[in-house]
Image (cartoon, rainbow, N blue to C red):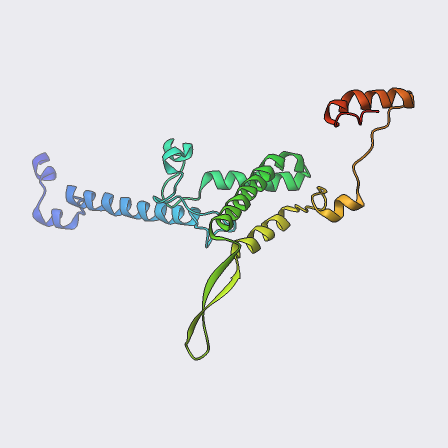
Length: 216
């Protein structure tokens, strides 16, 4: 009687739902693919290039000239396509400084930029020295005829624009004839020193520079 109760017929097997190993593997693969798609979507939302990002930061790329010495890339803190971490830190530093009104912390950065621009001015002037102040420029008329025209070296204009951007005014440094005329050298006055002592000091300092017979 017990054997009859435990006996399973083919009809009973057809009525039951069984999961095979193949079906389990297929289900696991489908779940893995779905999770990978979700993770990829999350990464894509997080990774933005300089074109789509709210912050104008370029992405980490193979052709970056700083990659070989970039600590973030060497320590795997940034990957290809992700936003450049050094640039992000620089921008956030400036954001925090402006938010807190702590512009003193930006002087080194501003000095670096100003120094770099000053170096560019020197290079532009070097090209002017090498090529000359006046250079020949090729132009084309409306009828298509080509001709050359002598013009001022374009580097002069660029150097002047950079100096203007940096706020460098030769007049402020008394480096123009007019500024020297309007602002003569300051005369040092020694309070408590007699005129005779000042004269003796002057003679002692400059007597060896004067021709003989003019020392008085």
